[in-house]
Length: 102
Image 1 (spheres, rainbow, N blue to C red):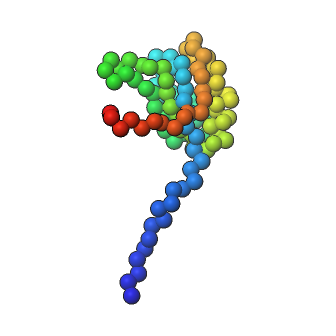
Image 2: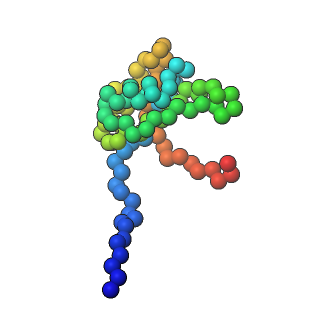
Image 3: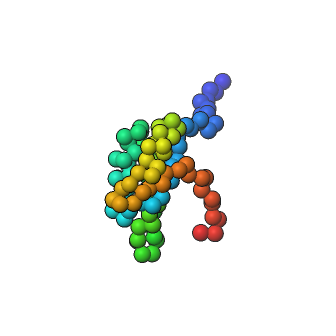
């Protein structure tokens, strides 16, 4: 009799929260976002959006927090906070639309 090991392929219940940060100053990079949000909990990833052609800062960033409640707390505390003269907006990110043509 042959015994095999099966891997459970069910998606795990992920409790992370994706946040979008708008109105970022040009001086903010992904590392700065990570430091800013680490005060509220564990950060899984950060990303700042730049233009593909000109490499200019778009003023938008994304932060993935490990736990939902930490993300909620960060959203409440940082929404409207002024960074380098600009008030940032922090909100829950919508799911990304997949573009099959690009």
